[in-house]
Length: 137
Image (cartoon, rainbow, N blue to C red):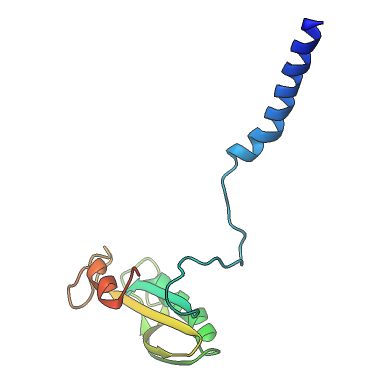
C-alpha cells in the first residue's frame, strides 16, 4: 500500500510540474496595443516623447507617421530637414518638430546634437534636459 501512495504522489508531482513549468519559464509580455497606467500622477493625456539627433535618418523617416498622427489631435509646427548626407541612408527627408498644441496629447521633441546622444545643440546632457522638462515625474 505504501508503494501505491508513493507512485500516486510522484505522478501528481510530475503532472503539476508539467503544468506549472511552461508558465514559469516563459517571459512575461504585455499584449500589443493595450495601454497600462504607469503613474497615478498628472493628467489623463497621452505623453509622446521623441528623442532623435539632428541628421538621423531613422528619426527623419519616423517623423512622417508621427506628423500624420499628431495632426489629427492638434496643431503641429515643424520645418523640413534631411538626414546627414554622409550617413548610411543619406539625405532622408524628414521633419524637425518645433512645437505641438493639443488638449489630448503632450508631445515633447528632443533633438540631440550628436550621434552619441550625450547632449543637444546647447551642449546640455540628456538627463539635464529631461529634468528641466519635468521627466521623470
